[in-house]
Length: 244
Ligand code: NAD
Image 1 (tube, rainbow, N blue to C red):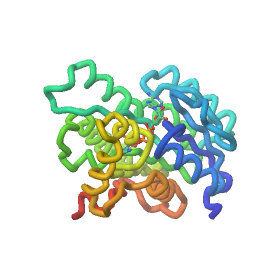
Image 2 (cartoon, helix red, strand yellow):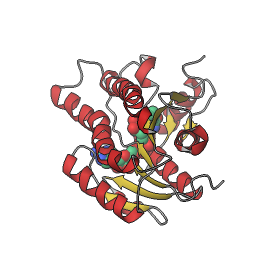
Image 3 (spheres, rainbow, N blue to C red):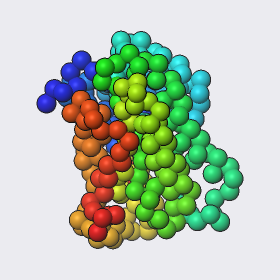
C-alpha cells in the first residue's frame, strides 16, 4: 500500500516499541517520517532521527521546527512518547505524579502546539495519540498511569472538537498490554521472567499480548486518508480485554 505517498509525518517515541513499529509502517506505505525521541541513536534510515524530550518545551519546538523544515511540511503527528508507573495512590509521591503528567499529557500538548501551524497547511492533517485501555479499564496498581491516559482520552476528544473545522482530525488508539521493550523490561524485573510472561499471556482473552505491529496498523488507519471522516474516536487494540 502506498496511501501515505507524499505525506510527511512526525512520530514521538518512535525509537522503540509501538512508535517504532508505527514509524516503519508509515514509511513502508510511502510517508517521509521524522522520529522525535529521547534516544534517537538507534533510528535507522529511511526514518529521520531527532533528539527531543517531550517534557521540555524548547526541545520540542526546536526539534519540530527542524523536522518540518527538513521534511518540507507536515501532515501527520503521532503523539506516542510515554512512560509508565506502577502502584496505588499511596505508592507514588507528588514528584512522580508531576513527572508522569508532564511526559504523558503535557508532552502531547507541547508537540501538538508546535505542529498545529504546519498541520493547518495540509489537506490531510491528522493527529493520533497513543492512549491506553488504562484510560477506562480501572486497572489495579496503575493509578497514576491510568489518570494520565484518562487525560489523554479527554484531550483527544477536546482537540478533535477544537480543530475539526480546520480540517485537522484527532483520534487515539487504546492498546491493551502490548509486547514492546517496555513490557519486556517489566518482565525481566520479575523473579522468573518466563513464568511471568506465561501468566501475563494467560490473563489475555486471546491468550497472547497485542503486538506493536497491530497497534501500528490501527494508528496508520486513523492517520490515513481512508479515515477522512473519522475524528474524536478511540480505537481499542486490546485483544478483547475490555469487551469480554
Ligand atoms: P517503549 O518504552 O518501548 O517506547 C517508548 C519510547 O518513548 C522510547 O523510545 C523512549 O525513548 C521514548 N520516550 C520516553 N520518554 C520520552 C520523552 N520524555 N521524550 C521523548 N521520547 C520519550 O514503550 P511502548 O510500550 O512502545 O509505549 C509507547 C506508548 O504506548 C506509550 O505512550 C504507552 O503509554 C503506550 N501504551 C503501551 C502499552 C504497552 O503495553 N506496551 C499499552 C498501552 C499503551
